[in-house]
Length: 74
Image (cartoon, rainbow, N blue to C red; front, top):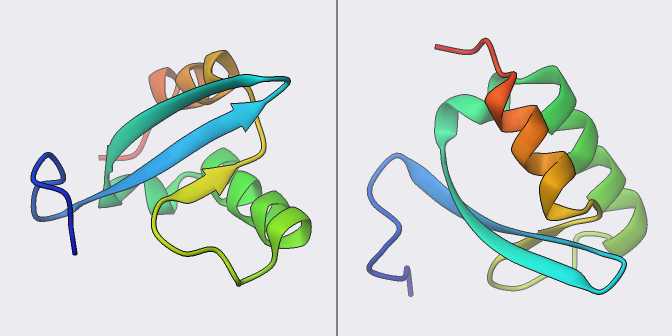
């Protein structure tokens, strides 16, 4: 079941590291961002493919926010 705040063309992730957690709703365009894809690879290495529900990214919320702000994807 997709949460109501996740619109079509978007997906949810949780940035979690060092005790800090924050949920982000992202546009699918971020899947083209090199730095974001690197986070996905790190997530795969750390958590494997067994995650259910929201995808957890192994970084602090501030790190993910910086990546998203600096994204040049359109």
